[in-house]
Length: 299
Image (cartoon, rainbow, N blue to C red; front, side, top):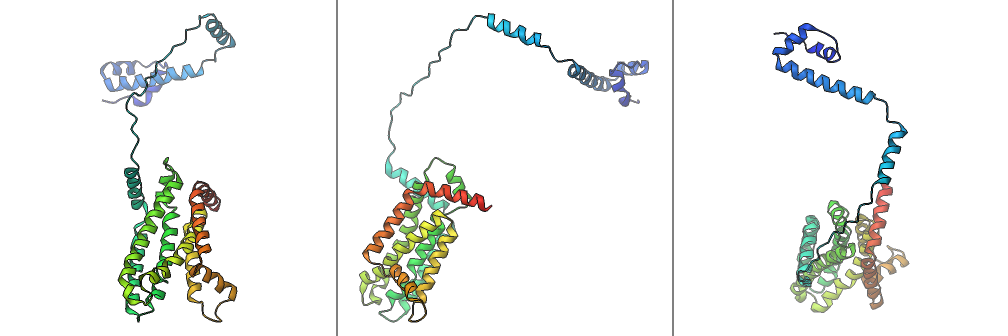
């Protein structure tokens, strides 16, 4: 059986063809195709019809104005009558810290742990009396690097966090708690292990690394949050390299003095560093918006 598929459009448009009519009487498939062509033809005629005149709109407006106004419908909104139980602080803080611990990149934790472990082993291998100086060169830059890398994270995880109602200030404070807490905890454990290797004992060994840790972390934190993590990490490494070069005649006196201010901080320097870190935490929402704007311009 030969189907007149290519002639169905003309037949639907009104072209007479007795043979097609006879074929359609016994072919359901061609009748379905003809019905589709007829619907298309009807749509074309509707589209070609002239648009309604202004009298149609005027008539609709007259009927709308003449219709009586419907009374307002008042919908009763049910009120929540359940107990308003405040969430406990400690579980909320625990959940926040656990979530942020998963968002911080794993290499940050791994590299920090390896660096502190290597510093502990080297400090244990040097002659007694030199452990404090060696260990003091390890913990502060490690802490500054992980603070800059973790607190100033700008990867996909940070994009997701910014889309949640959680304040950037809360997120930053949680990450600082995790990063500094883990680093300081590892440093304290290593201090207890190395206490017998230095004549200053545990207190002197603690001051050797905790003193420079505070200003170095505050500087790297400020640059990482206000600008980008790589800049904060670069600043920490630059200060650390300058510390390694502080030998007579190698550095300018003013540069050596600035490095000594960071690495052997007095009480005013430590207080200024703590104030800087607190200011960064308080201004975290504004600094995050500024970093997004700078990143958008750079792209």
